[in-house]
Length: 272
Image (tube, rainbow, N blue to C red):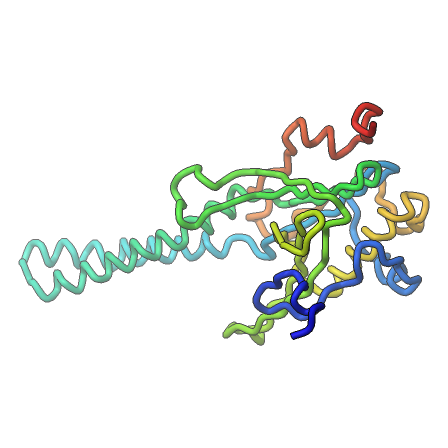
């Protein structure tokens, strides 16, 4: 193993390669391909991209309905019959089924809660004036599905210079071919190659390349470098699509302090 390999930051399972570094100048081809990227807000201080960490909502809802129907239609009637007639074998089978229902509920409830509480849009703000990136992060903890510990909106901010875009591909036994693609943003500890955080960007590699190219263009050259055709329309909104579960998802609401910071330039006393 070479010295260069020893100093590479840690990569997650399924890592394939990194996208160009943050200070690499986007080529005209990259800028042209990024013309289809959706921008929710843009100005001379910051630019905001929409993001959603789940592609389809409602799967857990229908899964929960199936569990409930199984409980009402099979488990509860069998349990009453076994108790009334005291059929030990039937009782044992019923308790096994009840245990399966409880485990399934424990597994599905976090997904159902995410469906209802995760905002439809989890934006990312690239603040050129501060050279920082603000991620609207919704945290959740599967080990504590019924409490508030580890749940809720907890935005984070990192220096632009410490970010790296990574491409991941994982093959899993799934019905549509088994290929899962993700583009992640890793955060290095300043001055080192230690990765201290890794955040989701998108689940499409081509889209991730476009987002990353446009972010580099903006952070390096500013708002004037963005072609007019790519600038957001005044009052543009993110559509909910045809999925009715999208309409139940709450809107993104940044905490006041970080909202103001992410949309503003540093004051003179912050710079000096």
